Structures are given as structure tokens and as C-alpha cells.
Image (cartoon, rainbow, N blue to C red; front, top):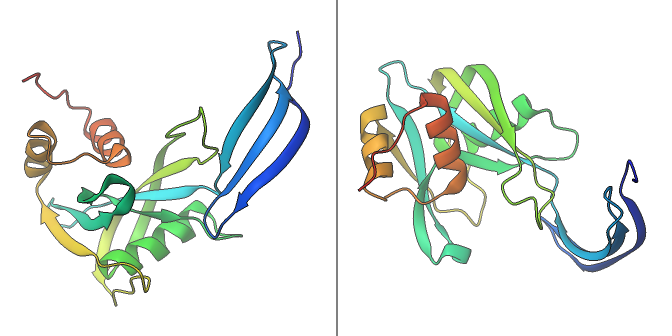
Length: 180
């Protein structure tokens, strides 16, 4: 049995600003000789911002792939050379206009490892201070302030559809959602 994947051939089909798509012929650790399509992504951060009064900050923005506006945790791609904390601090400021004095990474995961290399890093943000909101030119972001109970109700009533938000909130608060 092979201990590592061997890439026999790799061809870039698309090179974009956020992702690259490659077709790769590989021999996988179990000895499977196959062709895989992989979207390569540099990784991202997902931030759970805690206000001093216990509320959480969520953002809502239009997501073209989903064809709708979604309530989400603050998130964004990591820039080359950034640490998880640096990226989380930048994204929090850009999307909400807050700075955090305390950033605590608590979980990382692959959202779709069958086709996507992206690793998401979940980070809690505490001791928030107002700053200047700096969204990217192509972002229209609404900021919302919600109690944990309100967020859980939004999940239960299916008002939150974003996977990274579901994973982060449900992991962090370890709450089961009653079946409806």
C-alpha cells in the first residue's frame, strides 16, 4: 500500500483570483490510480465575534452561487503570508467595523474535501472595539447583532443556510437542534 499520494500529471484548467482548478492524475494511498478535479484555495478564516453584552455579530450579503443573501459569520480568504489571527483581524474590521483585542482559534475543517483544498479556520473574537468598516469594493454587507438564543432560533427555523456558520455556531455552543 502506498503511504502518500503520487501526482502523475497535473494540468491547470482555470487560474482565478481566488481559486485554481486543476485536473490531476494520481495514485492515492490505497493504490487507486484515478483522475481528480481539484479546486485549489489558499484557505480562509471564519470569525465568531462576541460583544460584551453576549450578542454575536453576523453579516448578511448576497452570495451569487446560492442566488440569495445569507446570514453568516464573518469570513474571508487568507492573504499570502497572513497568520490565522492576522486574517481574522482583517476580515472582522473589513466586514463589521470592529477590532478584537482577543482572537482565539478553536476549530479548523475542510468544507468540501472531495473537490476543494480549502481549509477553514474558526476563530472567536472577544473584547471588540469600534473601528472603521472597510468592505471590499464588490461587497455590500449588512451587519446584525443577535443573542445566542436568536441565532439558535434562526438555525432551527432554517434562516441560516451557510455551512461554515452552522458548523461554527453548533460546535461552539454544542447545542442540538430539535427535529421539526
